[in-house]
Length: 359
Ligand code: 5AD
Image 1 (cartoon, rainbow, N blue to C red):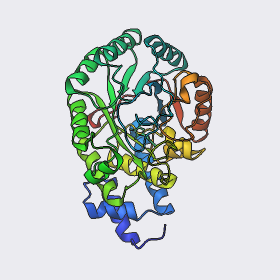
Image 2: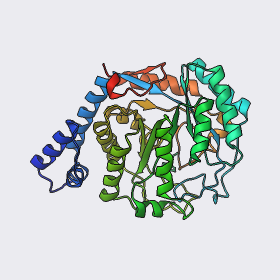
Image 3: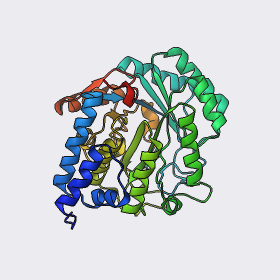
C-alpha cells in the first residue's frame, strides 16, 4: 500500500502508542492508513516484545466446544443464521459436551470454551447444569462461555455456576456499520450493555471484530479501537471476515491477511496484557495464518474439541479449517509449528495477567 503519510508522522504516532499514551483520532488514522510492509513489521516486533515481556514465549490453548449451531439471530455475515435453511442443525448432549472436556483434559487443555448460536433450547437452567458439571469435574480448569446476548441475571447465574470468562465480540462499535451487519432486532447498544454487564460481574471478558467486514472503514476501525480502549477487555477476538455461500454477504470480499495481522499488533500495543487469539478464521485464509498471528502479537490458539461428525456443521464461513482432523492430531501439529517460530504450547489455564500482577 503506497501512501502519503510521512515517516515522521507515522513514527510519532507509533511512539505514542508504544509508550501507552492515549491517541486521538487523527493519530489512529495515521497508524491505520499508514500501513505498509515495513511499518507492519515494526509494529509486529514491538507487539511481540511486549507480549513476551508479560506472558513469555507461551501460547495458551483453549478447547473449543461448538455445542449447538441453532441460532435465533439472523446476522447477515454468519453461516448459522436462522434463515440459512441449508444448515444442518445439531445440538450436543450434556454427556457429549462432558466427553469433549474429558478428552480435552487428557490432551492438556485447561480452558474449555462452550460456544454456540443463540439457541433457546439451552435456557439458563440447562447452561447452569452443564457449567456446574464441568466445574465439579474439572476444578482446575477455566470455563468460558460464548453464547451471545443474555440478561444480566442470566450471566450472574452462569458465573455462580462456575463460568469464569465470556466471549462476545462487539463486531463493530460504529452504529451505522452495526446496522449494515445485523437485522433490526439486534442493537449495538444492547451488545455493549451485555459487555458491560459481563465486566461488572467479574468475568474475564472478550470483545472483538471481523476485519474487512462489509462496510468497515478507517472510521469504523477507529471507533473499534477507541471502544476497546474504553472497555479494557481481557480478551479480544480478531479474525478476517470470510464470506459464507448461504448468506446475504456471499459475494462480499474476504478480509485481508495483512490488515488482520496489523490490527492484532495494534490491539497488543493498545492493551499490552490482552489475551489475543490467532483465530481459526486467520488460519483459514492462510496456511501460516495462525503462526503469523503469533508473530504479530497473538498468544492464544483455540483448537476444536467438538466431535468430528458435527464439525463440518458449525460453519460460520466457507472453507473453515480442520473439519476432519482429530483434536490430538491438530495439537501435535500446533506444538510443532509454534515450536518452529520459538513458542511453546503450554498446559495452563492461561489467565489474564493484570498490570498490577506483572512481574
Ligand atoms: N467470517 C468470519 N467470522 C465470522 N463470524 C461469524 N461469521 C463470520 C464470517 N462469515 C465470527 C463473528 C462471531 C464469531 C463467533 O464468529 O465475529 O462473533
